[in-house]
Image (cartoon, rainbow, N blue to C red; front, side, top):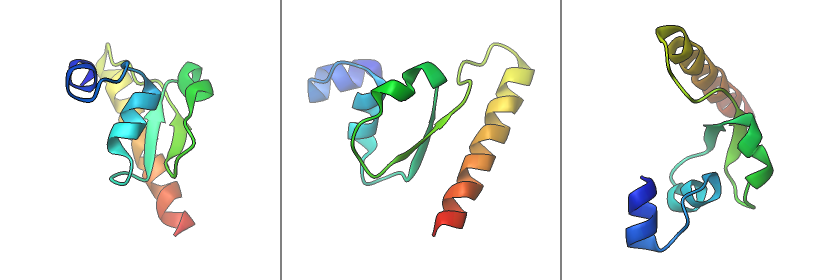
Length: 77
């Protein structure tokens, strides 16, 4: 995705660029807590989470975070 953002859209790869790319397609995104300060002005909710998955436990933790965030987005409707 980073290469695509750079080559096709001329954007510097960042959480902000990802949100610009997916604007209008998603309602929420899980991002590293350290990236929350880069939140762009858009209609996408950002949720802090550990997105790097080095172990099965990391993968499970991220999956649980994504499900929780999806539930929150559904409750907002």
